[in-house]
Amino acid sequence: MASKKKKTTPEQLKYQQLQQKHELKRPVLKNCIKAFFVGGLICMICQAVSFFYIYYFNFTEQTAGNPTVATMVFFSMLLTGFGVYDRLGQFAGAGSAVPVTGFGNAVISAAIEHRTEGLVLGVGGNMFKLAGAVILFGVVSAFFVALIKTLLGVWGVL
Amino acid sequence: MLAMFFWSFVVGGIICVIGQLLFDVAKLTPGHTLSVLVSAGAVLGGLKLYEPLVDFAGAGATIPITSFGNALVQGALKEADLHGIVGVLTGMFEVTSSGISAAIVFGFIGALLFRPKG
Image (cartoon, chains in turn yellow, orange):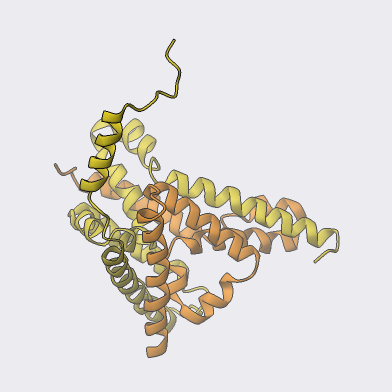
C-alpha cells in the first residue's frame, strides 16, 4: 500500500537541491521599488483629480474620494481596453494592482475577455470572477467589524 | 497642497510595497493579497485608525484597495448610529457605491467597445 507521504529517494533529494540552486530568485527589492514608484505615482495623479473635484465641484476633502474613484475606474477602462494596463501590471506588480485602478482592471478585463460567450452568461457571469473575492472579503470583514462595534456600543462597553 | 501631493505619493507607495511583499515574500496570489489588504482596511477602519490616514495623505489612503474595506465599515457604522443593528446591513455600501457602480457600468461599456487581445 502506498502511503500518502512518500519517502524521498536520494536521487529526488539531489534533484530538489539542484532545482533550488537554479530556481530564479525573485528580485524582491527591485520589485518593491517599482511598486513604490508606480503605486505612488497613481495615488499622486488621483490626488490631482480629487483637487479638481474639490475646487470645481464643491466636494470636501473627505467626500472627494468617491468621484475620484469613479474617474480612475473610467481611465482604467480605457487603459485596459487598449492593452496598456496589462503591460503596466507586468512592470509594476502590486504597484498597479493595489490602487483602485487595479480593481477596475480586474473587473473590466474579465468583462472584455468573456464577451464572446455572450452578454448575459459571458459578461454578466464572469465580470466579478477576479474582483469578487475582494468584494466578498471586504463586505464580510466590514460586516463583522461593524457588528462588533455596534454591539459593544449597545451594551455600553464603548 | 504640495505637501499633500508628496504624502499621497509616499503613503500610496508604501501600501503598494506592502502588497508587493505579500506577493514576493509571503508568495500569495494577487487575489489573496487584495483580500488580505481589504480585510486589513476594514479592521483599521473599525479601530478608527484609517480616517486620520485619509486626512493626512488624501488620495494616498483613499485610492489603495484598503480604503474599500474602511469605507464599507464607515458606511455600516454611520447607518448603525441611526437605525441600530439593522443599519449594519443597510448602510454597508453607502460610501463605496461609486467604486462598485463605476466598475460595473464601465466594465459593461468596455466589453461592448473593446475586443479581447491575443
